[in-house]
Image (cartoon, rainbow, N blue to C red; front, side):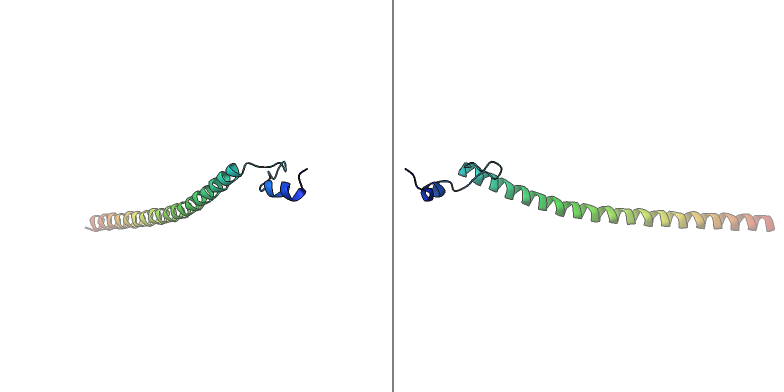
Amino acid sequence: SVSVATVQREIIKVDPLTGAPADVEEFEALKAEEARLRNMRQGLVKRLDKLNTLCEELQNLYLYRQNIEGNFANQEKLDLDTISTLTTTA
């Protein structure tokens, strides 16, 4: 007969869902894959943060450009008003 201690030593890893003995090599491979995916996720989160920062900077540049274009349009209107005032008074 086999003692309980011997059986427990042989079953190093168990499947958490079924409680059945798990293949140790498969378990280690899954742990390695999980670590790889976790690292990949962290890398993607960093890239996403960088992309969000770039999007904010781009939006600020767009607003800045609109502001400058608005200032030019106002200046052109002032210039036209000045010209029309000068021509009507002349």
